[in-house]
Amino acid sequence: MNSEEKKTLGLLAASHNLVHLFEGVLPPLIPLLLLEFGTDYFHLGLAVTLFSYGFGLGALPAGYLSDRFGPKRLILIYLFGSGVLFTCIFPIDSLLSYAVVMTVAGVFCSLYHPAANTLIAFKFQEKGKAFALNGIVGSFGVAMAPLLSASLGSAFGWKTPHILYGLIGLGLGWWGFRLKESGISTAGANGFKTKPGVSDRIPYPTLIMFYATAVMLGITYKGIMTFLPAYMAEQVTTGGFKMDAVAIGGTFATFALMFGGFGQYIAGHLTDRYRPEGIYAGALVIGAVFVFMMAKSSGVLLVISAVVYAFFYFSTQPTQNYLLTRYLPANRRGMGFGIHFFLTFGVGSTAAAVSGYIADRFGLTTVFYIMGVFFTTAAVLSIFLLLRTPAEGAR
Image (cartoon, rainbow, N blue to C red; front, side, top):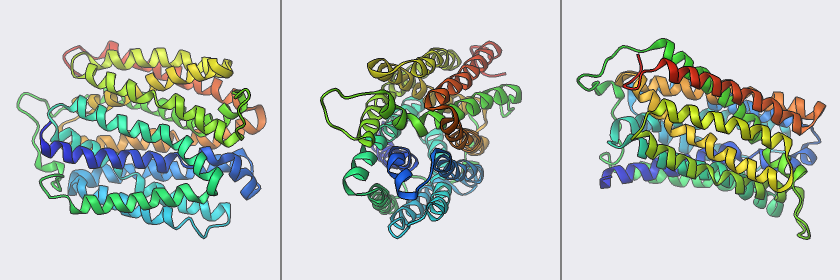
């Protein structure tokens, strides 16, 4: 990568890490919030769902706006908007007020993914590598959120991680604002032309099948991520070490999720060299097995199963992004990424509230069995996608 690409990727990666800290701040704090608001799993799951609806629904117009006006403006609006809202958590004292602020914050956070992925699609020669590196830093945000949020919440109160992440967002927004225009483009995607020899025709059946896998994975992701810390706290013990439930869940969830970055790194490199549909299908088939292993296990085996699940789940992300750049012409990629993240984070977010209801009625273990069914469905669809798509590209 040249120096311009590195500067751009630096801002995108830091912003990606932060967006997943924002997204993941609530689940590790569930044991604290149950007491703080006198509520249950369902209502806290509903708060997660509202944030995620904003996170997903906003991605649709974000994709269009990225194509129309360029990604830099959207990334700055995300950083400043979410930063302000998270710092405004300080005076909140009711679940309703908290849910409203989180919903609006989710809308601001929704601007990141379509804008960043559109920028990578146009600005980087080694797209698979750039998607992977950006994804790895984002995965570290996913992985850090349980431990960091739980540690800060246990020590200083549940509002502390929200405010800290908000201040980081404002700092990153200032950095992005000061970056030279050559470092991060403000041009819209409509200014780019499809390369000679690359068709403008969109393979709609292939694209629909791809998006169907995204919905299934989005449901699984949100269902598992919302209750993984609480499930770890319930199923994993620390022997002679004294740790409260919040710290146990956050620590072991973070340990497992850290391995997602390795999956993204390896998949990103493989995607630039081998058939991406095959990599995608293989990751989903193996990952499905370990979702069921998580449901059936406890203790060390649960942690190992979560590690393998995280490795293969997160390995799908650079491959998904790369596939979209192949299936869509240049002037439709922003919208394509917007639809993708709407389906993943918007439609998929329903799993948080539904999983909360299931957890209240049948226990957390049942949540993981049901998530395994959705992950298996995604794996089956990915095999059909592989069989449908010739090795030289989508048709």
